Amino acid sequence: MTIFNVLTLIGGLAMFLYGMNVMGNGLEKLAGGKLEKIFERLTSNPIKAMLLGLSVTAVIQSSSATTVMLVGFVNAGIMKLHSAIGVIMGANIGTTVTAWILSLSGLNGDSFLIKMLKRPRSRLYLR
Image 1 (tube, rainbow, N blue to C red):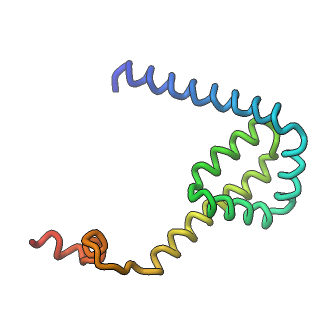
Image 2: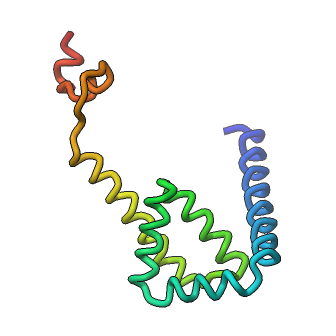
């Protein structure tokens, strides 16, 4: 690892933190107290927070995006940390459920790609 890689890493981290700060300030100005009250109602107990995270992740299909949004909300003071933890757990459960649904449904079709995915791995390397 060269000094340029270290400087790039530090610069990228600084830009990320600055962006989070700007996003938090913008959310705070835009939403005010309304969004905070909505989040308090939606995450009043851990089960509701988990279901919120699961549903948001199911809609946007990305637990990482859900987590990044939550970090911004907590940083802006719009959401409490203990509420965000429940939502993050729900987001991770939502990602897992989506993967299980896809794996249990099975792959059907006649396309070349599906045939290659369904083919046993040992035969792929023997030919």
